[in-house]
Image (tube, rainbow, N blue to C red; front, side, top):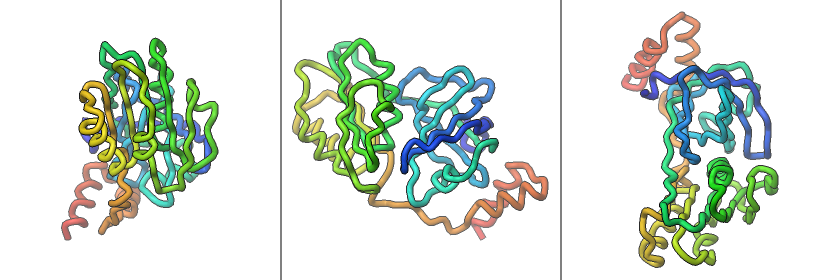
Length: 252
């Protein structure tokens, strides 16, 4: 499945969980199936856009697909998710995940910022045979009922992260285990080096995911696809024809 041929899903509910987190509940299309991997994510395409953004599958119960979207000051999905989007159709791609618990693991430690909170919550719900420790760095008040297991909450200003320093200060459980972390890319690179060089951890025993970049910021698009999309739909054009119009405008 390519980003240009997503499956259609309809937004049925929108719930504000905090100042920076919005829950969207979708009617998943026929044929959409979970991988069963608890940190799985999918590509989301919102109305009026061609570019996709990636979001964790918070849950999939029957045809009820839940995505918890972090909202920023600006962004493709951020701006749309703060509108009354119930009833609108979005595109979703087949999910994939990376969480892989090694057979000798005796514990699980999770760390992440707000973007990783949905994955950490789902992992905590899934891993029930091992002790799970969660460290969450968020800009708002703690979401105390969000994660099934106790959480150590760390406050961060919106757009900043000290997650690497938090992880460097952890006291690790004894024996082999599994560490999963998600958040800002520079913080993730720091901790990968720490795990590999300072702690000598086997790569099978950790997964560190860069979810966003604080240094790169939002990339300004020379051509906004929104008006092209709206005009194409008004003219009765297919998505492929609108894609062609957008590509022509970008190359002009």
